[in-house]
Image 1 (tube, rainbow, N blue to C red):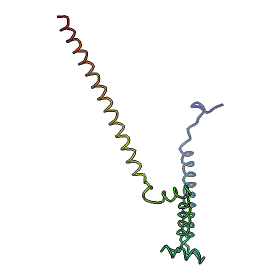
Image 2: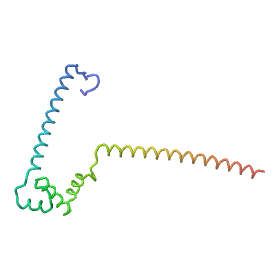
Image 3: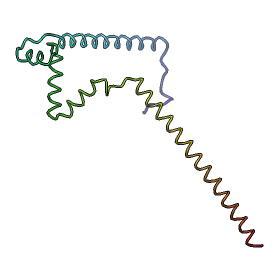
Length: 149
């Protein structure tokens, strides 16, 4: 039997509260795990490199001697050699391409405003066309009246 409104039961207040509590605990656990992963990753990426070849390269470019800088250099090298994926990732990390939620919201609002303006112009054009056709008919009637005289 498929679920429908007749066989669905509304949970009691205590059941709803318990489910909410379980969901909250699971959410908190996931947030803590994510925070731990971010902290661990940050530690790894900011760690000093102890390989002389990589150290020399980074120093040559005046960059910090960290794994993050080494990875960025590797990605930039791949992008220069034609890797579109590496190029796209670098562009996403730069402020030129990166958009926050406010930029995106503003862009959507502008698009909606432009759509409204286009609709208004289309409406005005239709109204103007109908007025012109009325004038044309009036002129034809007037001209027809002069021809009959």
